[in-house]
Image (cartoon, rainbow, N blue to C red; front, side):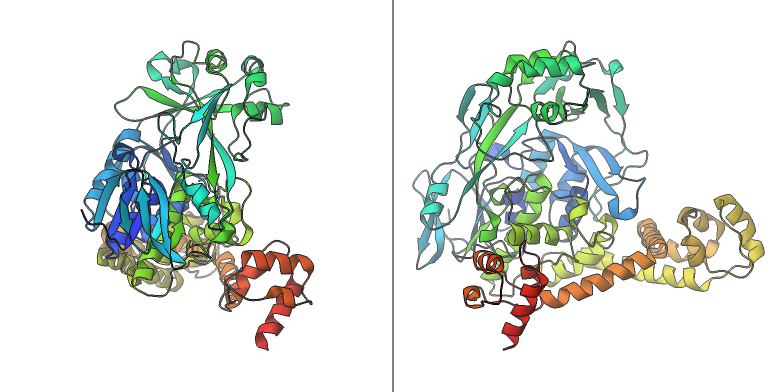
Length: 623
């Protein structure tokens, strides 16, 4: 097989798969190296994609031409739009997925992607020469050459698995860990750290009593992630809700002396927003119960994932505690929950392209950068793959701003602020979340992806039609003004104040009590505008409704984003000598010297750098 590639991707998890697909679809010869070809796109933890803020990321990946949304739609067993009771900025799509088909579909799509080769092996060394990347060496002693290497190692770098007092090496249960890379990168000057994550036990669904649990069905009209013509769910599987209780907590506490977390055997920092069950009952001792979800692992399996019961307690304690949960009295365990520690590299060592600052051609994406979650990993892989391909083509880098995408927020947070705990995306992290909704990811990002050769012509045409239809509908809503008599029954139906004169549809739609669906049925003119756009009509109507109801908020955020972007367009040299600027605060000099921001906007978002420091930098740059 060929030994020289444009881009080499190490690891075939969510980050590695998106990286390989992006690089290959942008015309680069790409090699994807994985330790096990049967585990490509493995869902190591919960069998689900999306959720709060994460669903927005999956839609952004899809809008950019990535595969995660397509894979999720093709393997979904349930769809729910979360936060429907809140404003559209908070709406977050989520799918429950068939774990085995998810991995199978990822492999199929990658194998159907021209320019991707595969190799099953462990990468033990990054080949470096002349101060830049030259390729990789595998455990079999085979060298593959290439000037762009993307490491997406997940939890495998020196991974250690903990179950009670037992501990053993592994990247996932039953899989060996990756050794050698951390030590080499540290010898090259990189800083490494340790993090921890965990997973719950898996249960035989035939042993559960679902009559004692609360059923959680999918949406009556299920949506999907991809903007392409992926299948919509015609049938769905339910999840089930149950709760812990004081007896469960007492039983769990009997294992605390053997807990690797409480005994200090785990040194890595765990995810604060997804704590283990033993951590929950300790930190929230005043609560007598915690919610659990019994989630099916697929269409054709009885395996159940116990969401909310992540643990590293001894397996016998896990079993006894489970049997005290309503519906789990006769539960049979397939395998116990466990914690895993692994190496990561603080992300302030990266550029916004996810290329390392000190070793040209080396990119990092996913959990190696200190994040947690499939979606966070996948979007990093996509950005790393894009930028590796652009580097091959000697073209300008691809960087998303905080006002352009949740992906831009995530990467900017990592690079500018670093992280000392597994980073998870939330809507609250995005200051422009009203602009960054899940429904408009295609309008925001597909033109940018098409410009670099990633998003297809089909995607661009679709976005063009959606934009055109939205403009046409907004014009009608603003210009069509029925008289007060026509409005009277509708306003009474909405339960809102009457009008005394001709009033535009947009003005009524802006009222919180009104809705587009009613206007579509009441005014044939609206449906006449939407009809030529076929299936896109619903999306166009949604865009126009959001624009009418949130016009003031959207305008304010656009103004704020414009002000912020001015600083983001002022570059800072990576070798800028901040220590010579005595007018800067000591903390600012040290933080700026360590992080080496790429723009003045990034510098302004570094903790410890205040507005006075930015003013000093502006003066210095002016000189």
